Length: 390
Image (cartoon, rainbow, N blue to C red; front, side, top):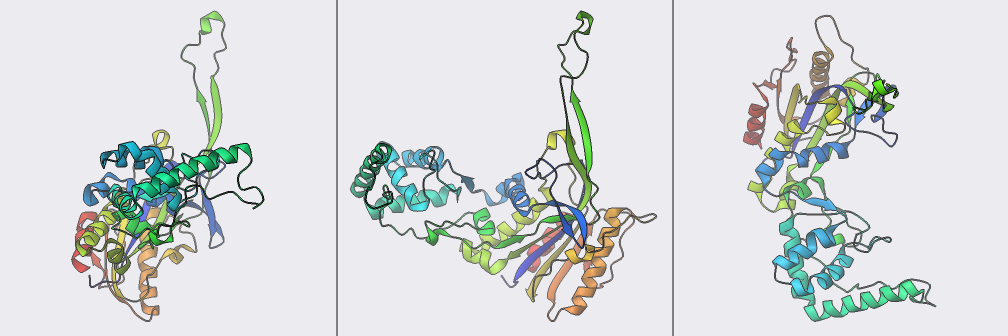
């Protein structure tokens, strides 16, 4: 690949909704430029991207993040591989190499593991082959006995610590990872050889305008109440829920050298970029989706293929919140602000060797202040041009 990074800037307008909630069940927010803004966390957006059907359709395999690997992933895979009689023993010892067990339930890991099936299968094959089934059986038996000692309170008395149950010396080597792990990375404190540096950086989405948080008072009617029999005709349930309607600025950057290195396959890296771009368009967080039906894809998309120079997040275009103008709505004003800020920043930066293009569904049309920024018809054409340029 001849390019350094692919960057994506999106403007997305959601109707009254609560797409991403905080610990109080309220839409997430933040302060930016001295004003409160609506916010969608980067973690929420990344999950929406890798869960988008188009992402799996293009890359074929998607990783799974879970604490339930023992019973729901590792043991079934071992059974498929012909290790059914020793599957539990292998799973127990293998998982101690990757993460500490959950204190309350040793069938779970203390952290969510994140693997694709092909990578996990190869790691299991190597584990059994390199460690040996007899050593694994012995370690599993020791792990069981140590667990019984722990329950009786006699585990490692005098040493002041618990035994490492079933832990053996095995250094797992990295193998080919799936597309979303290559993009979003992985960190395992207990198995650092399997750590993966993320190729994609995804920013928190923020509203381009000041936040206007509102409250919904809702009721639920009991269909079986009988008012004629003198039963209370009021609602069976009632409550309140917060929501807002906002135009969000979204930004993401993909390092092509890191992506190609993680995948070890340049053609797969190209497919992953395509999947990431198309899934970013489809990535609508599912928070309270049934109650708000916020099926609103981006209205404006700017893509950058950078050959030299630093990636450029354009959120500072909105330090001063935008406001609707006569004849131009918030989305159109936001797009114009974004393009104007881009022109100013390109004049400011020391190196700007990049391809720029945008597509939109806005009316009236924003004015393009940069003659070398291509305007294209539709998001699919935008993605095609990016793939041509990388």
